[in-house]
Length: 183
Image (tube, rainbow, N blue to C red; front, side):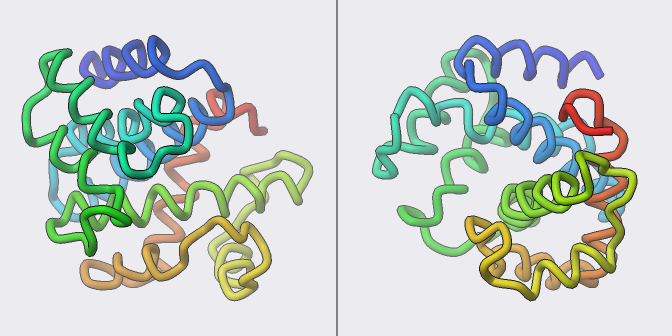
């Protein structure tokens, strides 16, 4: 928990937007739970998720720099390649397809978190009322949470069933619902 608290503090030094902070925390929570299910390092994956968009406000929409600047910030703050390379490569507009397990999990978590938050908001802000069935239905509706790149979420199927991923993602976000300003 100490590592992830340090990551959160660093994130808050570079990111001021509450919605972006919530997105990063949600991504980290999903990554942690999925890592556990896959037998990976939960703290490492959660840290990657929390820090993946640390440069987003700094680059101000410049997708030629996003991820690259994040990796630089993290290197300057003592993080190793196990974190910095995944953060850098999550900008698939520059680096292409995901390669490693952490890369795939980050892409899937990064993209599904917004869809799940949107589902909770439709349900009056109650993440407790969101089910895998809800996610599956809304996942099929391309216009719902249109920013969710569904093809990136589907890459998780290399490691687990999509329904199982939805289930784990909901559980993860329910665990931090207070941080996400959800009930």
